[in-house]
Amino acid sequence: MKTKTLLVLVLTISSTVLVQGQLKTVSYADGDQKLEGFSFSPKKNNPKKAGVLILPAWMGIDAHSKESAEALSKLGYYTFVADIYGVGNKPANAQEAGKKAGHFKTNYKEYQKRIHLALEQLVKSGANPNEIAVIGYCFGGSGALEAARANMSVKGVVSFHGGLGRDTARSIEPIKPKVLVLHGADDFYVSESEIKAFQDEMRTSKADWQMVYYADAVHAFTQKDAGSDKSKGVAYNEKADKRSWKAMLDFFDEIFK
Image 1 (cartoon, rainbow, N blue to C red):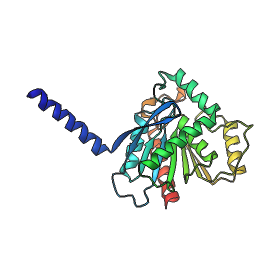
Image 2: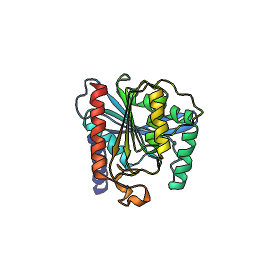
Image 3: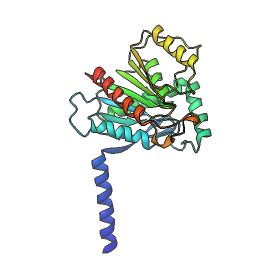
């Protein structure tokens, strides 16, 4: 009897957590590759049913991307955390992550396809297909820019400390989604030449773009588990984290009106 009671209690607690958090694991696929993302439903009324797709950093879906999705759901947004690598392909360490992220950056059409598939899941979760934004962190920030370059059906994209580079052999097409880049002023992983090339691309594409620099911030400045040693090139910066989050919300107020 005690065992049955305990089992019921555990199941009840688990169900409660799921309902209160509005978290749902979503299985989908890219051909034979299984994908598994996470969906959050808004916790308050959202007349426009606006949605936000979150693209994780190079280690794949992590606590940070889920926390961002949940925080946005509390503000009334439908959110979905994309699985870019696929089930069974989560990097075990930074070296593996670099290789996997590098593959998708080079084979950007594959990256764009995985983003598009995740957008479909966001719409299936209840988001209005005409009221969507894409945000991304680090590698995911590069992906957010790829969503803009592909002119996916989104109103805007936000890159948090993301890579800005693109193969110069690629043609520059007009970019319709609005672009917001949130960048660490001391991020030496993104060179001045890469920044200049990106800004030239934005001008040539006639994009509606903004780029905000945060003082004393390096790569991964929103990642609380990145430590505080700037000399390593990755470090958390509380001011930059809070300011960039607010900049994103102001951007959403503009694009979703």
